[in-house]
Length: 448
RNA sequence: GUGGCUGUAGCUCAGUUGGUUAGAGCAUUGGUUUGUGGAGCCAAGGGCCGGGGGUUCGAGUCCCCUCAGCCACCCCA
Image 1 (tube, rainbow, N blue to C red):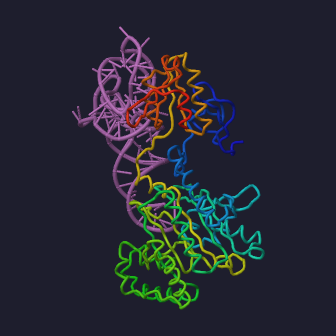
Image 2 (image 1 turned 135 degrees about the vertical axis):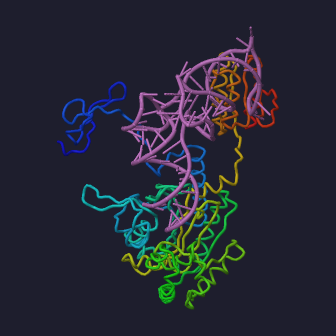
Image 3 (image 1 turned 90 degrees about the vertical axis):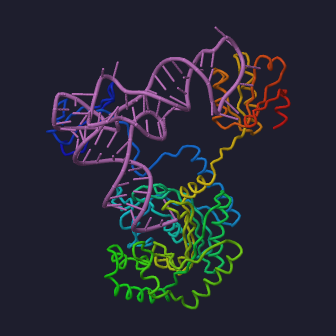
């Protein structure tokens, strides 16, 4: 018993106390005998990096998800719902065992059956696993999937960076054509536009394939090793794990940029990239950024990133081609391209652009008890017509009801008092222009 | 994960070299002698001063620990 962890037992007593067994029998605070302690019940707290999302932010989530579903449907993509938990090794194999995501940000745990599982840190591995496991490669190889769900990474939280965050992802499997790359980028653009983000920029690059990248990587590592003395500590680490990142270093990356060997794409990659750019020209504004590198191991050829906002976490979406991933996971050789969009960051980007609160619908006000029944009837009739209608605070005074109408964002107040009730009319007040008119209830219904 | 800043009412913030019962604005609730909100007036409610420990006659204030948020790094969406 004494080695057991703290056990809660028994009911909560008045004053918010409950009895608990503690593992240390010599606990000095014990009150009820050996190892038994009265503890003040404390309000459960939100876990760091996790959060509650209320309206209007929760509305924005629903809006973006709806916009994405509309656009994906137009592009012929189908929704794939993947599980939140996978075997940990899936992420090690696919995301890459050198990435920070796998090395230190995964929520991994052992379940009761001795399996080592992990909360998904990204969606692509699950989608690919589902594709392979259900043998799409044989039966119906070309697939356009999208998914919507929250991901988990144990990073230090910051604005636009949470430990549980939502991503909307797109994976186009089985098409090696540069048009597939363009399609992935354009479907993303259409969603961002549909949702209403205006100020964003698109960065594009090609990081080559297993034919041309290793040669470049070797040349770069060679060069950088010779310059190790000029590098910051962190870059020396980067040199081991992800040498391309050294050129991005804010401390002294610029020193090497000009001298460092340049990426030379092989003929096939060059042609592919040229075709992608040609297809995008005139359809989307973008800039080629030869320093754009993805942090995940599986990318090849085309990589891209959508950026918006002024904070450090300005990447609202990122992705690229991953032709080698399926084969490296034990599947057939199968090309693929995809991306993930950070829902929170996209919403944040739009919120900074527009702060106008929109007013819509009716708020029904009743001035005294004799009018309440009729007022409620008006509310339900408008609702039956599909019009956003609120109200019902009939016990409150007029001032409070009007204030509430304003606060809840109604466009019109429908005011019903004894005079109107007798005549079968209402006062219809436009809350934006301050004007009002008396109209019959019948007219009110017919307007909607 | 590393470094810096912050934490007092629902929100934004005052709070003096440590000293009575911790304040303001906005918000909320009620009233304004009975029908009009987004700047009228009057009144009221609302505080584990993030949490724990220490120093002291006395801590919102000083010290230590801890939790959380923000910023930068790191990384990524």
